[in-house]
Length: 56
View 1 (cartoon, helix red, strand yellow):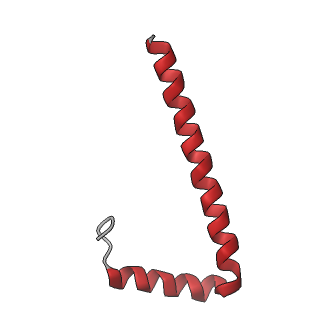
View 2 (tube, one colour):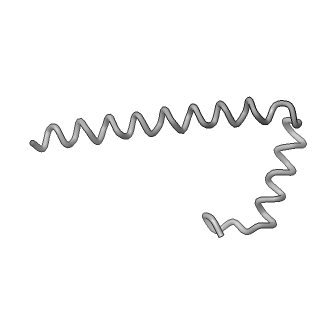
View 3 (cartoon, one colour):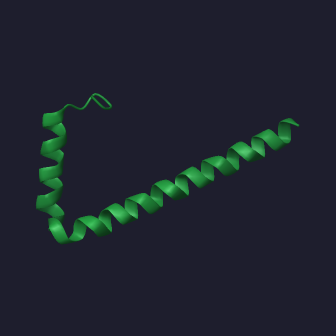
């Protein structure tokens, strides 16, 4: 179980996404999500570095 979501719920979510976006749009959607997560991680790292620099 991941985040309290079971296998059936994950399958249901995947099916809904396929219905809304279709098979051809999924790679573009995943690429966009990946870029967003990467950007978020970089921002968090930057904030952590700023906090550590102020503590020194």
